[in-house]
Image (cartoon, rainbow, N blue to C red; front, side):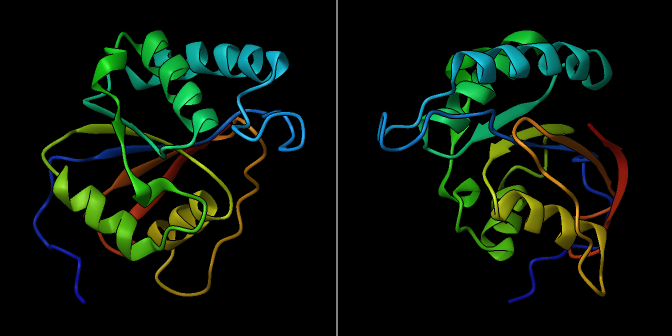
Length: 163
């Protein structure tokens, strides 16, 4: 399945964010962010919002911790929380193909922020940054990765920031 296009898309800036520190599943099966996780995400979100500007789309997996992370980033960037899109393309086990399909659906958006999980968020970054051997980026809780895109296909990204 070819999910690439060669023309320059409107989407040029992709921000991939791993959710913040979450409570253990045995404490709360919904795994919301911890107080420290919320605090750390808030601090990062305000730094990133200054670099990112106003996103055209904020998306998250359907899991609570990713949604909370997206909400914090959205608030910092002045993006309406009710407009956050939830998608299984950002779930922990999502494939790069599913993620590229999601991006293709929203290719008219210039700046997109996606909050997700390991291992998929690191896999998506590697997929977009390399057309050959995988690139291994460390995505700790709350890590943000800015990728400049020349298209929506494998290897069409350039790493602009990893924080």
